Amino acid sequence: MWPAMKNRTPRTFAVKSSGCQMNVYDGERMGELLAAEGLTPVSEGAGADLVVLNTCHIREKAAEKVYSEIGRVLNRGGAAQPLIAVAGCVAQAEGAEIARRAPGVDIVVGPQAYHNLPELVRQAKAGKRVFDTDMPLLSKFGALPARRKQGPSAFLTVQEGCDKFCTYCVVPYTRGAEVSRPFAAILDEAKALIDAGAKEITLLGQNVNAWADGERGLEHLIRALDALPGLARIRYTTSHPNDMTEGLIRAHAEVEKLMPYLHLPVQSGSDRVLKAMNRSHTSESYLRILDRVRAARPDIALSGDFIVGFPGETDAEFEETLRLVEAVNYAQAFSFKYSPRPGTPAAEMDGQVAPEVMDDRLQRLQALLNAQQHAFNQASVGRRCEILLERPGRKPGQLVGKSPWLQSVHLETDASIGDIVEVELVSAGPNSLAGAHLVKEAA
Ligand code: 5AD
Ligand code: SF4
Image (tube, rainbow, N blue to C red; front, side):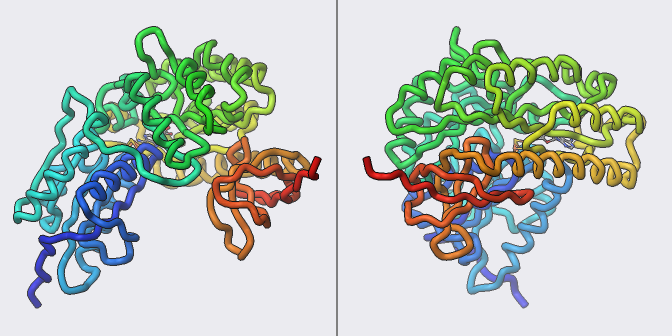
């Protein structure tokens, strides 16, 4: 059988993002660009004429997924094959390999070049295979269209890239050097998001707390957002312990709209491993930062990232990670098996840890983290708090929203998505809670 012809006149598109929240943000902005070109967004399964796979390179599993996804899209059947664009961090890191391994891919576009997507699509329509993984000096943001209507909780990228060069991590290579967007451009985008219906804004950056514009640091940005009418909640992620400034910690005490949640990755509890990771903090200095954050905001929910099985990690060093987790008591956390990434220093290190050892360590760490998360949720039962309603629940009449501590809470209510309602948390599971809508009595 002949392969189906390529559809060179795309009318519909779908963007499928994997990986971090910054990819979700980039995916939304690519969607806005394509819509501004007159293409209609459809769901990924609906046979879109143009499929954008917005990919993640952080671990091998995520990166390998791209090739099976490409195969799935190409073999989905139908009269014509869709145009396929591979975007995101795999495109940046492995553009040439994608071109070689996947001849059905029409466009490869990196995270700093996607503002060129409309032009790349025009060339693909004309039958060319096109590649753009430039990291131009002028940022893409100025070339993107205005924000469109979207849900009550919005992402806003304020900082991109990383100069920290942790020895396991591809981000400095895929996303480039640390760059902060200007204060005024961020405020303009925040206002546009609020006009489009956002009640909550999460400021995004690979090192968001390293954001700076001249003398201004992240806390100035947070305080400026605090002053915007219509915005109810502010969050930020992901932070590095070394950039957790006194001013930012003070903002947690003073800015009411800043939600009591901090994602502060530590990766390991062993100082020897932290040094080999080039983390430039110790487990002790990390714990002291958390003491200061908790003093500023006693109810803060803490979250972190962990890697088990970094090259050379011994049983005793892994135990130190468990001790650190016990000392912190996390509300939520993410943990991963170390994955050697091509081009990173750790991939060349001696003492790569056997897969079954990693499996065992991950299981033990996750059992502890899950127990802490469950305990945190249990301890919330009986609390009263505000919930920002974000989406329909599974049952009719049910809506799901987020607590200030980023817990998912489902409740029966006749309020609407986008409303903030007063709730009593009535029961807790490991991953979500049930709430009862408290109806205020008429005065
Ligand atoms: N292997 C495993 N996990 C990794 N992370 C980053 N690079 C790797 C890697 N090579 C994890 C870190 C980081 C999170 C986003 O992903 O924990 O904080
Ligand atoms: Fe994955 Fe990192 Fe790229 Fe996000 S920035 S998509 S986590 S590789």
